[in-house]
Length: 191
Image 1: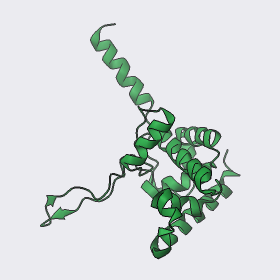
Image 2 (image 1 turned 90 degrees about the vertical axis):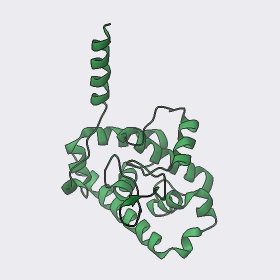
Image 3 (image 1 turned 45 degrees about the vertical axis):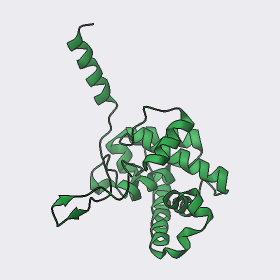
Image 4 (image 1 turned 30 degrees about the vertical axis):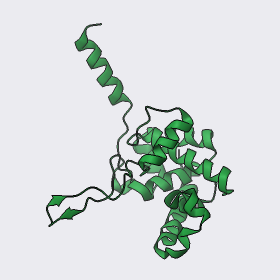
């Protein structure tokens, strides 16, 4: 195959695997997200089948972590208002997975080419992480509140109950729970 044809084939393959970020007006309706781009449905369904974490929980995590933005990352601080400093966290992508957790996922699953900016990889990561929290901590895979606390604090932090001193984090976990309930209810009417 000629180099130019090979390059075009590779680029088309990469583009075909890309999903798009849903528009903001769809964020609170899981059916609208799935209607916008069925890759979201396919990825959530695959992760649910693989890890046993319901689609509505997976999608509520993405809603909270990145608002469906593939390249989401923490704000960058600036020195003197214009000199960029390093970010405070390595969190990145739809799942806002940090480097160490992402590496653990890749190592555990053998998915070394997985990307945090990929819908399917991010939803698989969230499913895997929550499955591990279920196995190690006994949290139900249908309990978005405690799963989110373990996701945010890490399983060690959750075990130490580090979230007890973080009223703001408990409020966020309640938001994730409410979003999961909303999505669960909406799923019944998705076509």
